[in-house]
Amino acid sequence: MNKLQMIAKGVAPALAALLMTACAAPEFKQPAIDVPTAFKESQAPVPSEVATHIQTAADGSTWKQAQAAEAQPRGEWWLAFNDTALNELIAEATRANANLAVAAARVKQARAIAGVAEADRIPQVGANVGGQRQRASAPSLGLPDGTPVRPGNAYSANLSASYEIDLFGRVSSNVAAARNDAASVEATYRSVLLSVQADVAQTYFRLRATDAELETLARTVQTREEDVKVNQRRFDLGDIGEFDLSRARTELATVRSEAIGLQRQRVTAEHALAVLLGKPAASYTAGASPLLDTALLPVVPAGLPSSLLERRPDIAAAQRTMEAANARIGVARAAMFPALNLSATGGGAAAQSFSNVFEWSSRSWVLGALMSMPIIDGGRNKANITRSEGALEESVGTYRQSVLVAFAEVEDNLAGLRILAGQTAQMEAALVSARRSADLAQKLYAAGRSSYIDLLDAQRNLAAVERTAVQLRGNRAVTTVALIRALGGGWDSPTAQTVAQQ
Image 1 (cartoon, rainbow, N blue to C red):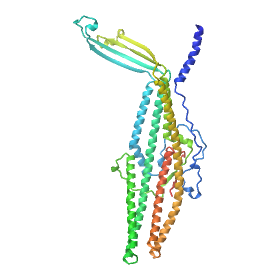
Image 2: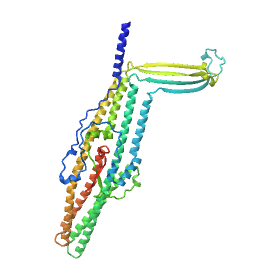
Image 3: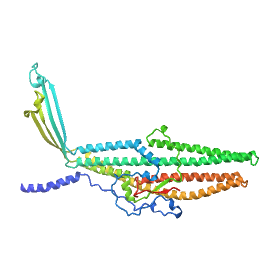
Image 4: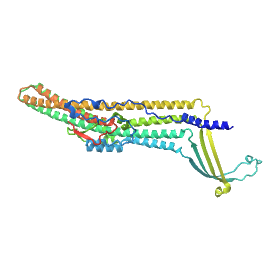
């Protein structure tokens, strides 16, 4: 017997450890991600003639291991644009945007669900107090039919408590899953917040770029109107034929039509901005504010690819979703093992009056322990484990895809700013030449040394170059915001540098 006891003492701990290992959630392992040491576009060579236009810069730091930092404040990155109107719009959208309110409500729900899971960690205690008056039938009391039975009273007051001992990690795994779910929803809220702020900034700059383009078209319309007047006078004097006059009138109508068409683009952007601000489109009007050459754009260093995993809220949400899925494997495994519930009830019951309930002779109590476990479940629990493992595999794939998309978005916008800087440099040179050409063509035409067709070609070329320059200006502002969004709403520089937009 002693030998058996010794064997049992040696086997019991090993068996318990085996059971705990079998049912506990597996240790979470961070998926292997191929993180480059630097963004390719941040290392691209910059031609000397466009170096002053590049708005990105590598910080030159060495690669470091990414750490979870999704709770870090994103920072008021929009202040780097030095635009009071933009600051006010983003503040208003943060207060009133409907999608942001929906995301905040989801955070509230997720936190409450985590609180429900946490409640299983402590004993559940309840109380019940009541009274009733009843009359039983004579046969139910074993008396002959017709025997008079007087009604009676019954009073009771009880306290009850129950508690599940977390033998195999079901409760702790469930709590871990709920906490990570809540953290994922909170990260999603920050992602929505960043998206709303970036959408406001991009829509605002598109609106201002459209205003600048309309301003350019207005100057072109004015030029065409002067051309019509000049050609009308020369036609009246017999210096030119009707062809040149008709051509001038055609050009004027065409440019006016372009200006009217561009108003549709402006109205659409204005309506989109109203929705972002949580306002009806009919009640919001944005004043004209052309995006001028003096607008300041921040220099946004790309930083390290590894730090992107810390800043992007959507990656943080995917990370927490993985951890929640991993914890649910532990919940599914624990369902295959015994569950131990402790319960206790104590109180009193009386028939004469409620005050008698609290007399010592009226006391009653019950203590109990119940262990339950499945024996035959038709493979239900195994299927639940397989499903949980599949959910983890799915979340890992989603996480990897989020990281790849994040890297691609940063590279896209770094490349976009680099290319736009090159285009801007060339377009500035073209703008100088086009203005000079139009001025010379005007003088030659006025002196009668060239035809109206030559003047018109020079004016058309100048108008096209001016519009392209304005569009590039807007694209650079929008792409700068897109890069900030791709970086997670901030960058590593302690202070934002600015350069005058050329």
